[in-house]
Amino acid sequence: MTQDELKSFLINLKLIYQHGVSHSKIKSKTNMMFAIHNSHYVVEQIVRERAKDMKFSDALHKIGFEEILRRVNDKQNIQDYNRLLQLNKIRNDAEHLNIIPNIDDVRFYVKIAGDFLKWSYKNYYDVEYDLLNLEDMIHDIPIRRVMLEAKDFIEKKELEKASQKMYEGLGALKFMFFRFFSDVRLEGIRFPDGNSLADLLADLAFKMLIAEDESALMKFLQVRTKFKLEEGKPVIVESVYPIVPFRDNEEANEHYQEILNIILTYQDRVPPFVWRRTE
Image (cartoon, rainbow, N blue to C red; front, side, top):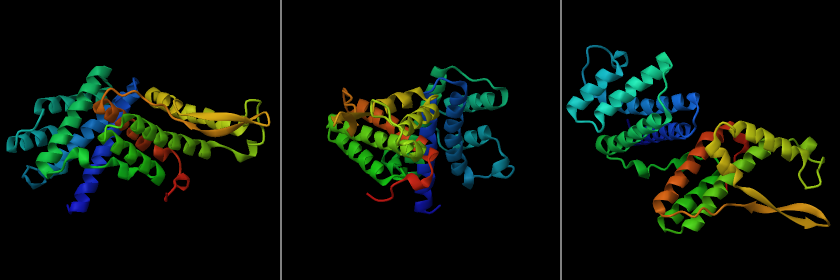
């Protein structure tokens, strides 16, 4: 692979893994299965790529993951080798026998996969996992900008500003959904509180879309709209973003990663024409 191809390969695996992390936060059988699948998938892709210069008894795509993992480990000891074998068993049980482990075990093995990615990126490719910016994969340019600003504020330990910016990015995505779901034909039908029927139906459609992902929904709902009265009628003034009292940079960064995952997970649920390609 060229350097550009390698970077694209590694970033895509990181994104797929982060989607798995997002699924692992939802206590439903389907989402736990997706979390296991995504975590195993990224590990298998790295291991198979590593094995391309090794000789096997048959074409590589016909060789089982467990044998490939063993051969790669023989060449260089793999971090958490035995746990990755167990992850493979869990994946097989989930996909072929419909046996899903409990949520704590799912999250444990999702973390094992993440630790392996960080280790393999460094040891196999001399690439720092944390320096591969998933923000580059955000479609909407202003959202990408404010998320990078939030990341910069975390590094500067200005955590209140970081909270403001990361929720500004999440709020922008929320209103992208409203823009897509809203029907202008219903905009003229308004209620005493100032809401239009178009907005209320958009809000309902949005909540139905996110309903299964409780963690994401709760974060979206923290972004509110501030009203003021003009001639006795409420008028939208601005969005109000929560200020999360982070204890330290580590907690702020973990929260940031959760919001980034939400943006990357849900941004493709609306068509490309919604996104702003310039500032």
